Image (cartoon, rainbow, N blue to C red):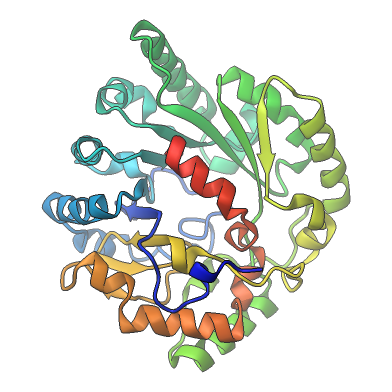
Length: 366
């Protein structure tokens, strides 16, 4: 049953504000909806970068988020490509807010001293397999070792300063290239001395789901979406049944490492997940429109970070409070409550999250 406070078109302040600092990235990973083979930003990066908002604009956003006491998550693209990122992190921490960064880790070796100095709370580190597999997926040889060098330097400096933060959580997206070696990921996590390992199920949409989304979105909101084009995949190449067996063993036989996968995984068939994107497993209420506000590099705001087709406001023109419960925001929530998730939501982990767990994690770790 949906809690009453998440069943209204007017929402309480968001628990998390996501700052997408840049679209730019230094890797082009196969499964990425932004920069993969059919990624939606591949052909338009110069124009996108020209419209990125200034550091003063980001500070203004942080000032407003501080009134909500929201956790701040920085992402991209690759956020460490943003010239002013450490000024931004320090400003967030000066407001006594939790701050995390989602990164591919390539630039940690360059910036590990600045990371420690900034008092960053948490790093979500994308590692997709063993050395050979990771470099294949990331499209650049030597990436694994470069990241490991940076993480080791970071840990060394943490030990010297007697620090626990930033926490390191490895994000591993299970796909056709790494599913057969996924049982090696606990050992990879030990190599990186990570605090957590998150085994994320693949986000994708079949051509049918993408087309259904296009039609349903247009019917609800009156214009055509585009983000689905970066996520189309008709054959995942993953045997979900074998994957489920491997993950069950991993969860019960690696007591020295905190391992998690998609919330509610016992009620979700991995076989059906990877067989196609039409089945929803009975989950019908994502809480992102009630808990998360995403600010894109150009200052426009939305609820869904991976499918940013519906814009609810623009920080260059409106305050965060006005945006969060704007007419566009209320229309989206109203239609969501009436008609349920959009087809593109079917293979997004946010639909299946345990939000009580997630809110506690944001509060304590960042």
